[in-house]
Image (cartoon, rainbow, N blue to C red; front, side, top):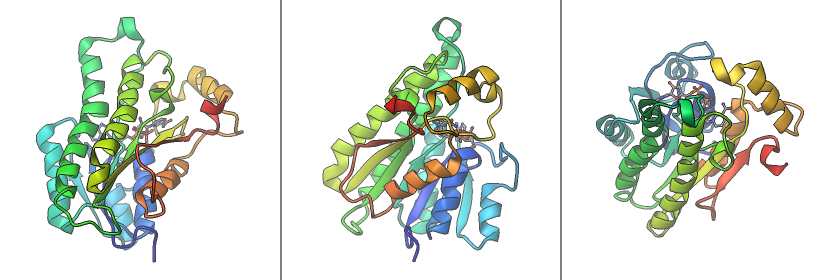
Length: 257
Ligand code: NAD
């Protein structure tokens, strides 16, 4: 028996990086999955997540979804309902960065980051909670939400004001959903990764920012997607039994210093 045996999960941003690692970990633990992303292309290379996991015998489907689009977000949740009959876990991982400070950020750049990183979480969570509220409780709960935030939702994200502000919103919305729906059997927590090495290019791997992240991280390595997936697994599992509204740092000690 896996730690998510019998559970169903919808994971956004599951084509690459941390979302892909969460999908693999959840599948290994027995969950049936619906993966939602704007693309199936794997940024770091390799087979699309759905094909990769299906070949290993897992029950995994993919739905093309832009989480910032209300109709597409609702369609993804509806597809989970139609496929599984019940949605136990929503993971909100999809996000984008902008890499610009205040004075260089255009309104359209600001709006796009907010639309994906924060409105996307709102839309996906709203659709999922509406469905979860119709489900009978299993093991005391109707459903769980795991949001992927960032240490930059709590401290400034140098020269990326839109990203950091959106992630502060994710930390907040996690608490709000937790408090408003705890009485209905829905729990909502977040994982805040520190610097995680994924397939991202550009600013993410510029020597300046790699040096900054290394200097800020007390542990002698940067993070791996699997580090974040382990924390997401805990929050998605029944082992997370009396916790809601929490934001767990997986940052190698970045925020402890
Ligand atoms: P990534 O770019 O490798 O993966 C993000 C995925 O989201 C991609 O598959 C992309 O296609 C998808 N996506 C982008 N826009 C979308 C949209 N509108 N609708 C649906 N899917 C969309 O990024 P990652 O590094 O794996 O980051 C994953 C999560 O972890 C994000 O929420 C990110 O903010 C957070 N995070 C990452 C780090 C890090 O160092 N990598 C640090 C802190 C937080």
